[in-house]
Amino acid sequence: MSPLRITIVGVGLIGGSLGLAFKQGAVEEIEITGVDSDPQSLASALECGAVDKIAADPVAGTSEADVIFICTPVLQMPRLVGEILPHLKPGAVLTDVGSTKGFLKQQFLTCFPPGVSYIGGHPMAGREKSGVSAADGKLFQNKVYILTSDENTSQMALELVARLVRMTGAQLTVMDVESHDLCAAVISHVPHVVAAGLVSMLGSYPGKEESFLQLAGGGFCDTTRIASSNADMWADICLTNGKAITEGLEELQLILNAVTRAVESGDRDKLYAFFSAAKLRRDSILASL
Amino acid sequence: MSPLRITIVGVGLIGGSLGLAFKQGAVEEIEITGVDSDPQSLASALECGAVDKIAADPVAGTSEADVIFICTPVLQMPRLVGEILPHLKPGAVLTDVGSTKGFLKQQFLTCFPPGVSYIGGHPMAGREKSGVSAADGKLFQNKVYILTSDENTSQMALELVARLVRMTGAQLTVMDVESHDLCAAVISHVPHVVAAGLVSMLGSYPGKEESFLQLAGGGFCDTTRIASSNADMWADICLTNGKAITEGLEELQLILNAVTRAVESGDRDKLYAFFSAAKLRRDSILASL
Image 1 (cartoon, rainbow over the protein chains, first blue to last red):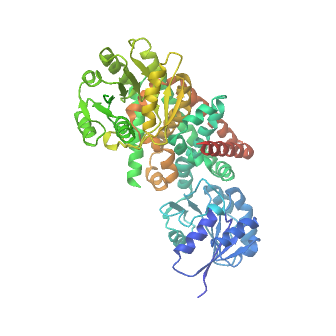
Image 2: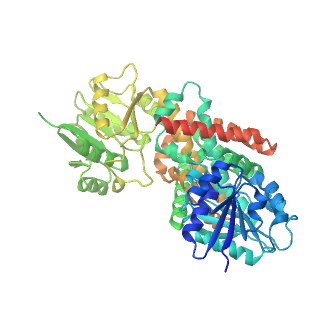
Image 3: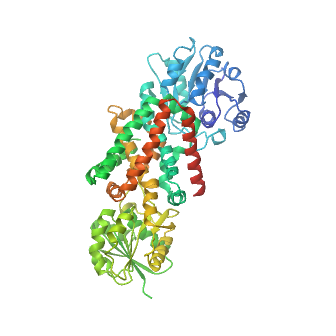
């Protein structure tokens, strides 16, 4: 029996970590090919054992693959997938790790040939650092990994990708594309934009930089941790899940405006209710995780 | 030589942790009295060794003290301090751990008798849990602890409180009240309100609770960690540093509005610049800590 051939296109933090995680978790024979436009990343991926083989050309690197993981920023995916799609072998399954799914579904709707399946994926894992040098085979352990599914999804393809996701130690969740994009906006995208906003705000008070630094303790670093991630990735996320993100920002601003009004009118009961409801809700989320 | 007599009024998380930290860090003989309206907290503080003696009555517990740490929520401080002040011994130094300083300065301006000094304090440390059962003698280690000072501050009193703060392993910072309140709003208070707002937002999407829970991974828990703290304390902070907080929220909303406009107009360059500037700024803050 020949090994399961996996190709990872884009061997950065996520692609490299997937390779390492598959290697660590595999109970069957697998062979991983890494594809990247950056020769340095390819060499590092090979050296750290995230991939077994490398290819600079996406078509050459994917044409024999059983499963292809596209791990580039979201906006680069349509062109890349369009390029390799005609050369994939029948029965191949293509998946991706983009943080937004509706945009890709729209892009891919009409271009997949019969016999090649697409399964949207979104591992909710990341680190402050990027690049294959930060790759970690344990990155996905106990993290949520979403696969999207609708009435047209091939159950066989879904099961194949799900099997690989389970190898990484991630918690697999299957949901539809629309739910994913709304929930990801509220749970991940809006908090990220806000964290970046809180950091940017420090630039709005000229002359106070040094005092800010003196006060920047654990709380500020926690709240803004996610602001230290890949700017390319986040620009793409904002552009490809714009509606849910702007609606979420608007919703948040309504809440912040209510807080401002309570502060201005000295309404302690309202402020207390706001903070204690938030504490209750967060504690119950933590308890259910 | 008699021991340095310290009284901690309010033996919750911060008061209890201060007691433990003084005990662990003391190079001189100290005697700590705990005062609290809750007998259970007093008993626990005594049992865990945070205090040597306890008193239910604030006046009785503070009248012999050399240094008094007021560790109640901010809005309870003026009445409490007004009650004990006439009975403090000459040379006594009173300090507090409130997160806002201008309000207290205003309250205390005229009521301190000659011979009793006030030094405003703000340890920037906390935990998700509250109460003396969560107290930890290492809570302040390597955390910022601000003392406030102006032209009327007694340098001897400041040096005494500073000596105690250093015992806890905290990083001592001295600044004026106005700088403190502005910087605390930007670095701590506004991020806290926003974290609570992000959690509250989950209630704005009926029927989506379960999907939110499935997606609530590490990022969301990090960003909202500070939302799980004491609602009483935060209501008081909002009311006693209202101007800086509402101005900070307004500043943040201007930034978020600019992001919304960039998303709506598909301006990728602007989004990329926003995220990469935030990343640069946060990375440089971390590097300087």
